[in-house]
Image (tube, rainbow, N blue to C red):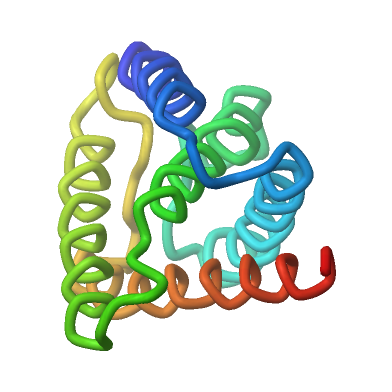
Length: 151
């Protein structure tokens, strides 16, 4: 639990401190999209197919923190620095760097308590290596859609 609380504090502090691009409306949209999408993915991968779990295999209150206030600020930081006007190569490199960073964080979250809180069953880090870039691209597409709607 210590690792989760430290990560929540760090991610939220950094996300709101460095934010120069996102409006409050966009932050709320990204936040809600992240919570809804993560809940949907976890419903299937963790709930139905028992791929991983947080804290315990049962539904528990501690998991709510991981599901609601841990990942949204990460998406804020990702979008705040995303090179929208740059070449495809630079955007792919940016996504690749973020994927590696998120994989490192996932590996840390797999440490034993009190630092870790995440547990793999059949899921492996190599699966995340292929899934994270797709998820990050989905966040970019959603952000672009929100900007289009705002106009």
